Each structure stands twice: as C-alpha cells, then as structure tokens.
Image 1 (cartoon, rainbow, N blue to C red):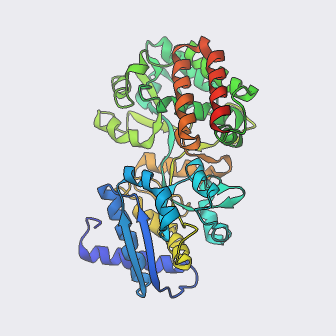
Image 2 (cartoon, rainbow, N blue to C red):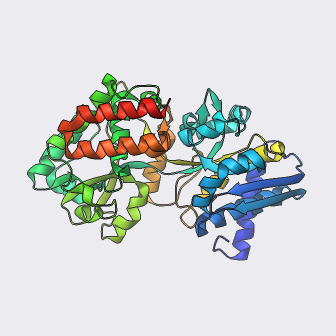
Image 3 (cartoon, helix red, strand yellow):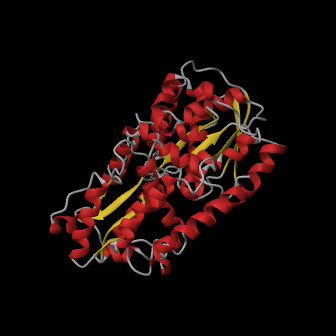
Length: 421
C-alpha cells in the first residue's frame, strides 16, 4: 500500500499505532461500526486513506471500519445528500467557507471539545480556518504553502536580496525590468491565479480577519481597504511587472517565461516546484520567499488550502469518530501520510516532520511559525462559488485594464449584495 516491503510496513504500522494511541490519551476500547466516506480517490491519496484505516483498525480490533471512497468530483455533488439522508461517522471535506454551508445547515458536528485538548494546540496554524461562530467543526490533515518562487541565479546576477517589505519588492522589480526582464510570470486564462495575487495583496494590506470578512460578504467591495489593496496592485501593473498577454496562458503555459529567464518569479502554490524542476531549474537556480509585508501593523497570513475531516451531526458512532480524528492529526500520522511517496504535501501538526526537500521545509517552517497571521484557503474556496467567479473575472480585467477599476468595483459590489443576500 505504501510501496514498501511488508516488514517495513509492519514496523511503520506498529510505530504509528503506538504513537497514535499515546496521542489519544486513554486508549479507550472502541466497538461497533465506524463508517467513513472519503473523496481521496486518486491512487496515492486513496492508499493514504486505506493506510490510515488499516492502522487505526489495528489499534481498535473490536471496531468494524467501513470505508467508502467516492470520486472527488462526484463527492462534491453527493455530500449534501448523504449528510442529510444517511450520514457516515466521518467525512472528508475542506476548511473555511467550503464547510460553511454544512455548518449553517446543522450537518457538521461541533468538535470544539477536541480542539480544547492540549494536543490540538499543535494545529494552531489552521484553527481559524476550522472555526465558524467561535466553534471548531473539523480537523485538518494536509495543506501546502503558497509564496513567491524565484530565479535565484538571476537575483544573484542583479545583486538582489529576498525582499521583506513591499517597498523592497518594488525596488527589486524595477531592477529586473531595467535588465530587460519581467518581474512575474502568470497565466490568468483560468482566472484563479489572479485570485492568488488579490489574496496576498489584500491580506498584506488589511490583514487576515479583513480578508475573511470580505470573502464572507461582511465588508462591501466599496470599502476603502479594498481600494487600498487595488492601489498596491496597480503599482506593479503600471510599472509593467507582469508578462504580456497573460490572459492567453494557463498557469502551466506561463512557466516557460520563468524557465527561460524572461520573468524572474511566480506567485504560486508548491505544486509548481516539480514542473519547474522538470523544466530545467535545479535548486541552484530556484528558490522561495514569503510574500513580503505591506502594512507593518498586519501579521503575515498565508494561502494554504487545507483538506479536512468532519463528523456529521447525524453520525451513529461519534465516540469512535472523535478517536479517529485525534489519530489523524497526531504528529506521527501526519508525518507519514504527507511524505513524498504519499500526499507529498505538508503536515499541519507543528510537531510533525517533513521530507528532505528545501521547499517543503521552508513552507513547513513558514506555516508552522506563522499561526498568528492566519491561514486562508484561497479566494475560490473562501468566497462562495458565484462570488468567486465574478470577482476573479474582475481581477483579470483589472490586470489588463486598471483604469476600469471603478466599474469593476461597482460590479463586484452589486454581485455581492445579490449573492450574500
């Protein structure tokens, strides 16, 4: 299941089972049925899910675990029906606004009592993303960082250092432009990449709480804070920081500009590292930095899309479900499931460890040490789907025609009044 020898697998299972039992405190005897529905349908995630069930089952031999894995896209259309009609004891989903409809409908269980336990303090970076109405509604099992991936060799050629402030970012960008290059590659053909730029500029300008309130419909798009975010974005647009014709490219199609040295950086998720390496950028040429500070009074929040487990409110075996969630978030389990052969992402538990990969290590350190700033889920997860579409169309238009900002803002505000109503 984990592509290891049977002997090694047995030792891993035993180790994680023992540590999971210790993490759970009193190793309570569980019995009956534990029904789990999962959307981890791709081969590696499915093996991870099946492995967790196997190890948890070894800890609780009197518990009958029934795992149903559903295709990820089908799962999205089925979740409300099965939560309402015949809920499992545990279900996969996502953090923040993506869980809000099911919290509001009373379909997810409040598990604030679990979060009050000492061990879950090690999940602090995502507590805000798991919190609605002051209560926690699930636990995270994996996430990945966003940030600025850049051409280290070009920075060295131009005598540039990683920027800590937006002023330093702009000064670097001017030197890059003066050298005949663009500062950033981006492909906005499918809109969401522009959402990443808005996320970071808004969180750095106004903070995580403001950003969360805006995407939740609690702050109007006509607010002065939003105008300030767009003003900061326009500084980069007006100086010609982004590649030309980016609306014609997908995020993958925008990569050659960085690989070929025509642009020096990419604001992107860690999933971009492998194709950049495949394109010919080894780690002597490729590096990473945290998106720099804009407003010194604002703590640095990050985009880190987070996958989660929840207990449906109609679950029949909530005792076993809570024990499973505690097992899932144990540092040893999160280390195991997130390693390169499995999910290849980052554990949320700050006591976990990560593979010997410089980008995973930098991302883990950044997210684990940066919990005060908050973890956003990315614009198209934090905002309702209809609002996300309208807003990201506006972001793309702004990047091409910044003089249209007043019209864009008015359109977004009208949409928000209709959608959030």
